[in-house]
Length: 486
Image 1 (cartoon, one colour):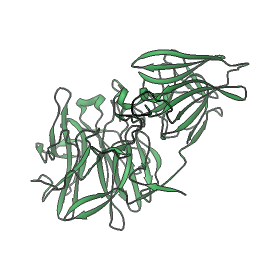
Image 2 (cartoon, rainbow, N blue to C red; image 1 turned 180 degrees about the horizontal axis):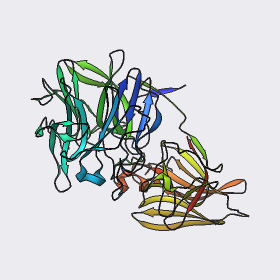
Image 3 (tube, rainbow, N blue to C red; image 1 turned 90 degrees about the horizontal axis):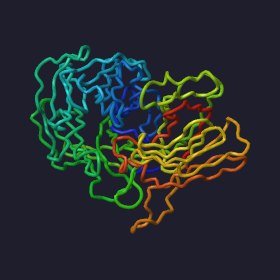
């Protein structure tokens, strides 16, 4: 099996940001944020840190994860995964249910089921961490935040994790190295010190990891003289926006970290389309401070492809499938197809920079960042339309009648390297999206569209591209789908 350098290759690719990790014996578990998509918080397992398999999702019931307004980039933001005394703990924020405070769920088996939510209602804000002091007192550290002023500061408080009750008044801890948006706190007791690690600079081009240490979890903290200890700001590195790290120790006593980054492409300002992905770094300790060694690990290349066949009747959902509103239970699997009701969308993350996906369906198949930014194929009888939606404005760019079509029409969406030369510095990029329909034994290309308009730099937000099945006005019947990275 071929391998690639960890500094340029994600361990979990495609819209899996804010990684958090813990180890139990020889097993590692990693969770990422998922925003408006449900089930929420994809959970992965590994025994070697470099090869990961999704084993489920943490938030699988609407009691755990209230839908709220289901806006793009709402829902579940960054969280922390930990293990203590036989239980896994995951703490996070549902910004679509913001005033309910932080959410804690627990499980004895990380594959689930996870418990009903416990709300820490006295801790309003984002990016919560959960840790225990030397006396076994549970501490929550979080970024105080509200929608009027944004970020305020970082506070810490002792809680009862079984009830969410605060056991005292919260208090400020280290406020970062001075960059904006001191977020994503993670607290660790390592050796003689308590370490508090932050994401600073915003989760875009200025993103960084900073760290401080103190003799006690409440402080006083001293910042690392080398802060930021990880950043790719002001570089042309192939992976940028790096930050939001979490540490883990191996059974052999070595240290590693997971962190997020993006892989931009195309001309200035650079466009990222897969969202923020999860990467791996080695950690050395120098003078009592962590040092990132991002090229330590070799990441094996794996086959990201899959094939789904819904024609055989009822089947269990693979954990890759999500919906941006509602529940998977609303999608009927009993009639030889996945019937997606009007107004809903059945989605799966895109995980590669070049790829192709085919679907046999009647209804709509699209590539989207959100509902306002998408390229789609609409199948209605023997008529197939290619539709471009940018900023909520939709335009039919091509139409094709399939000769002798039945209800079984196959369409294809693929991403290929850009061939456009429309900007002074070369390829506009980041890619081109091809929309095609199968007509007899051949594929007919209907449209070749600029990938910039389904990128984060255009659409905004914290997510990435997904393939979506579903139409606003009528049901969609999905029979099969295949996805292949190239």
